[in-house]
Length: 111
Length: 114
Figure 1 (cartoon, each protein chain N blue to C red):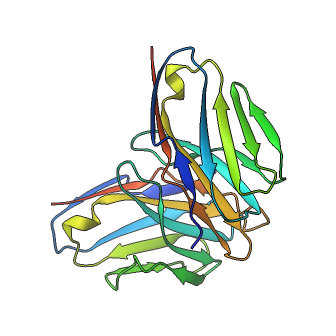
Figure 2: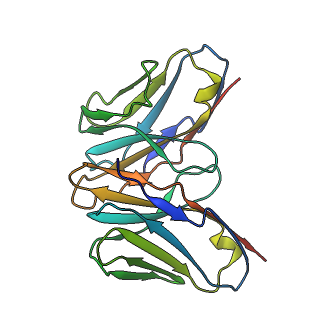
């Protein structure tokens, strides 16, 4: 079984602060996705990373895939209340044939 | 809107009743996934289809659960003799099944079993 561990589980910060959340595994993934989910809604795709060491930016969000493709991080600069939500990572392994999801980081950004 | 759709969005039922949920994937996607999610947890894999073939079922999927994708397009998930422990968000996702298997989710069906 491939496990993805996300940390921290909960994070509460003030508007304007920076933060980083992590997604770690002992398994190698072909690709990794990050999603944001709001209460009562389905997860919304933020990014897919494929290459070890890859860095992708989406406005104030920076995603990095580890060199060995076993871990990833999401850094948010100058967080805003609209960033509040559950951040999920999912790793896909072609041998397993399907994706594995972490339990997410619940982020609260206070005005 | 050509995203993944799910119906109904909310379902309240009494224990012991049967319920059926529908998922319409993105039209060109050949993979369709069902997940269950409880509060504060990530999605738990239930089953997935490649076209009309059901390729894998989780051990979480008891014999009260059945899923179909008869023509390789929409899918249904049926729960028979519902129990209070079945209360959860049921999510459907689709993907093109290519190298990254990037999945796109529907809005989910929130099931409450009284």
